[in-house]
Length: 301
Ligand code: PSU
Ligand code: MN
Image 1: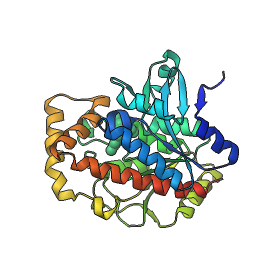
Image 2: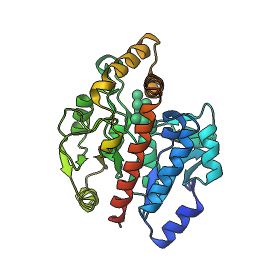
Image 3: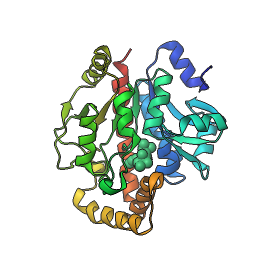
């Protein structure tokens, strides 16, 4: 069976010329941010990658095909679509076989990036172990994907909507390198600090690429998580966020939100409660991750 991969003109040219390519997910567009900031941010992030000497490949599932790179019309269309499916590893094949439109999560984007020969992927935050996972069993497939698919994922750590210590435990159990970039502490998305030391630290993009290449050469499957702290000037302190996150979590429990709906629900509730301040930070950190991913991508190949 021929794989249903469709490359954008820009990504096709990059592949022919040997220009590094950085993958981007689409769930952040459809479920992570509201219109029109989702579209504007997607464009800014793509431009940040171009300025960094790489080519962006935003990944989404449309009409039974894996799109590697979206032209402007497709990106604008996706950003305004209602009821787009949120696709993780479990959903990808069904979405392709039936032709439904879908946005790719971190796990699903990693799978598609690897099929397309892309080694570096920039996003905002990864999914992880949710608070209360001991009763809900809610652990994102993103963690297991990092253990099996060889893509380096640059994120701003994990949100405090997750249980960060448990998230790091699962990553350790799964043998995933968790590398803080330029600091000792694992960053917590909107905040540079989580209070928890990162298992590993690297300060050089070249070393991050070398570590992934060595991992693969050793026969170890899987990728690595690069945790890049939000720029100082855009950070929101942990103390300011703690009560907001707790309130959002209480609402999710009271309203019986479960499964795939949990992360988008919490993101929306926090956005509302911070009057958009959380969104400005979110945009700044995704752009920061895109710049680092472009640098790391220069050292692959
Ligand atoms: N965390 C964020 N923003 C996001 C997501 C997570 O800070 O947009 C999205 C990503 O696509 C991630 C997915 O892969 O949510 C995780 O969803 P779940 O927890 O249902 O696995
Ligand atoms: Mn989940």
